[in-house]
Length: 279
Image (cartoon, rainbow, N blue to C red; front, side, top):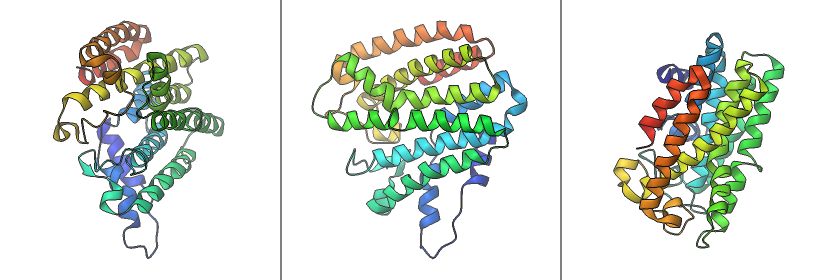
């Protein structure tokens, strides 16, 4: 399914005709740099498990998620935020081009994600609902709020409750949105949709714990981005130390493996991603 998504991405990246010397190249660069495609795969695997006939029709929504995620990385790497030179093993846009280009490419991906989503070959009511979910979780009530807190409280340690609030918004909401969007496309009950969204929030926090651990333990070559870069940030490793962070991660993996058993057809997929991504 990852291969099918990559083919869809390559044939649906928007091209703009202009005399700008590298506009399209810059627009595509971070999308083409790869990454785990974690969020689109979450959405597509929900659909595969519950409504496989809608899998092809779900590709637009999956791509929209990846575009939103990629825009957030481009902006997160800007000099005004993390000032990172590397992402997904590729020089960041402000390094390759300039800061204005990086800002504008992030803006374009953010906006175009909703255009791509609205081209989905699914009914209008479902598309409106998907736009609502994506915009809420990526916007001021979700990812942007988390990023604002992360930036404002740099060098100002938060307690564990505050740290979880930060990362629930910055990281976990978009991951939860992926599961919720797959649920909506599949026509699942509101009860199951809510359970998957809640599971996604917990999975997102686990994802952030692992990212913090990687930052503390891996080289930039292994991680594909700068590491040992969170010393001034609010991270799980900085708050509780590496040993306790590893213990907390392992406990959360065990807890989510048990909870995943309640999702029937999705259980096998959840067990697999927990085994592969969090060790």
